[in-house]
Amino acid sequence: MPKILLVEDDIQLAKNLSLFLTSEGYTVVHATGQAAGIEAFEKGSFDCVLLDLSLGDGSGFTVCAAIKAESEVPVIFLTASADEACTVAGFEVGADDYISKPFRPRELVARMKNAMRKNSRASAALTCGNVTIDPARGIVTKNGAEVYLSALEYRLLLVFFSNKDKLLTRDRLAEELWSVSGEYVSDNTLNVYIKRLREKIEDDPQNPSIILTVRGMGYKAVER
Image 1 (cartoon, rainbow, N blue to C red):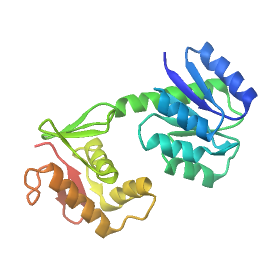
Image 2 (cartoon, rainbow, N blue to C red):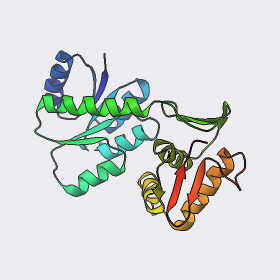
Image 3 (cartoon, one colour):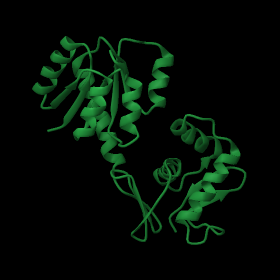
Image 4 (cartoon, rainbow, N blue to C red):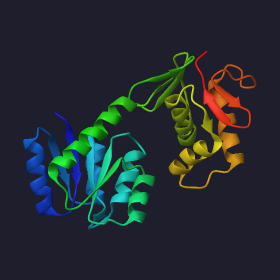
């Protein structure tokens, strides 16, 4: 039975939504604010988070950022705001979807199922050569031994392995790192992270066999 964390300070809405989701076969844990939402997530194991943007004691953005810093559990924002800037900001802190109030409960359930399906697929192990990523645990191994990566190095490797044998432009990679760090990623910064990543996963970083440079175009991860 999927377990849902509902972070919503509108008590009546939360009650009605909890009753509906329970009738649909979900287990619902309700938290009324920012602090309670973060605490509930840290104490439990959830399949999806429904998160109000405006909370009495803070912001849904803060809750989402805290969740995404330690897990890949899908987060769907529930908000009365249709402002484009809020939507963009939500996605920048890691939200998987966004639905405006008032919403149709069955549409919300469909969005939840879609987000959980995507997360399930994303949790499958990704392998290239002798290097494996376990997204469910956030662990990278080489020949079975754990490789310790920074958050941005891990994100960069995840992008490469999720797009194996596909050309990735420097702009695409910079955007991926920018969305995680929240800061502009320059060409020099990207060079540094690719160099560090190669030093940690390649047998011979000077002659890489996993992350290859495509001259004048970008990079790609290959299975050799």
